[in-house]
Length: 263
Image (cartoon, rainbow, N blue to C red; front, side, top):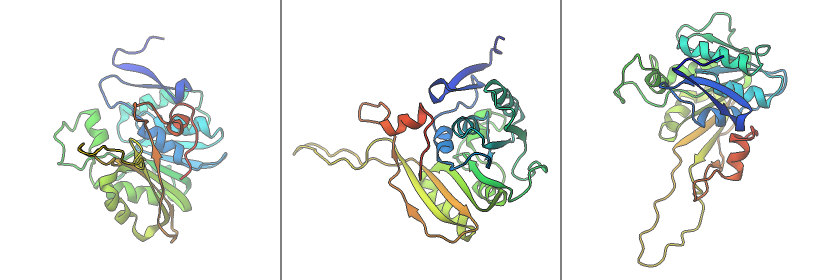
């Protein structure tokens, strides 16, 4: 069947996952793939994907964990329709579902503290920081709505069972805010930076040449256990690219082959 003109059919995990998305709307990048790789779900466990969009993260997780049960919640109805089609296209309707809901009025059928794992890729920008139409799909995916980041953290915490994992990917410059919002309601926090290039290479700059700018992590994954008091830990993280721009072997194992990323 031919696709609508405004929809493209793309692939994730080296072609293992088929993904339909709007040609001119929000386009899936590597962040949801990396997010899904970090969730330590086991067969038979339940996962909630908050802000699922067209379902990229939950489809990647479902491909890796063959009997995990995954539910996605998304405020934009048109994206939920695509997510449902993507679930069917990948043959996952028996254990993956998507539904409409927002953080202030979540679907009542989802019971609080009932999920083994909760994952989220929240909008990266605060309201008022970026000028865009509120009706634009990309803007709604990238700019926080009512309640800001706090609403995302509160909802994730409310849905994870005690001891369940909460995994979020966000901008590194909002890490302090994210940790403050988690506060004493979650522990055993792991901070996992994503490095565009190797930040640990020695500086071989010759005398008289300007030193290279240090590599900065622009994205960070944070994982915590709901209702625990364990200490915070900083991980070495993941280097995404070689100097020539190709993926590193470690990144390729995740992005193309669907490998797990242990934090």
